[in-house]
Image (cartoon, rainbow, N blue to C red; front, side, top):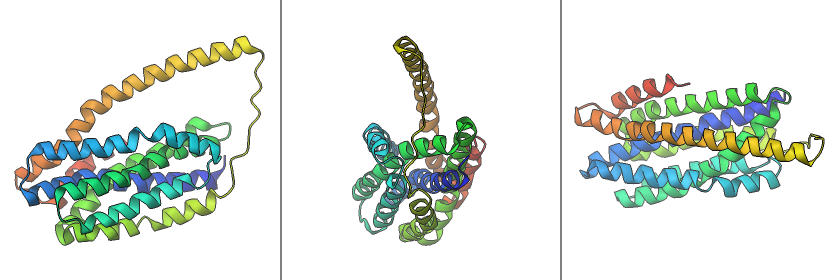
Length: 252
């Protein structure tokens, strides 16, 4: 197991998902500030999620071409930049546009993250990717708590400080992932075996994607609107950020 490569990409996963999960808290705070309906939170979250997810196949091709180098670090840096720029927006629309552009960095990070964590595991790819996902889920849990406190004390002006706090992860990934992944020799015996394995894999992937979609549909909707419910009950952003963090951390 390549501990250096796995540690770097897992730390990056923690950082990118801290920023990702902060978005719903930012949107909730902004709708309270501009006195906007819940639908605006849902729309903003939808656009952000689409930008971060639908671009992943394209970035996956790039991750394969670069052999696991640069893309994850560049993706996190991209998201950090636009996360910081969001603090200077003067309207809810501009805020959503800037955050959505920043979401492309998340789309770039995750394919590179998966391939690096799996490769770093050597003959234990499942163990390695479980650590990768653990750090990511932990980042999702930390994000609402941190952003809630920052927004309560500093408003949107505090976003650059959250972004800058992710800088060590960028530096570590640029250093630890500077070398391309080495090719591994996976010989198979005959085209029939390859075809059979490919068909089985495609079926399993299809089932897995269906499960992910069904789970995400309910969970994402719940997590998107839960902060606004707490906000309407009079809780501060720090308080409902902590509540959301506790809920998400249970999944880690």
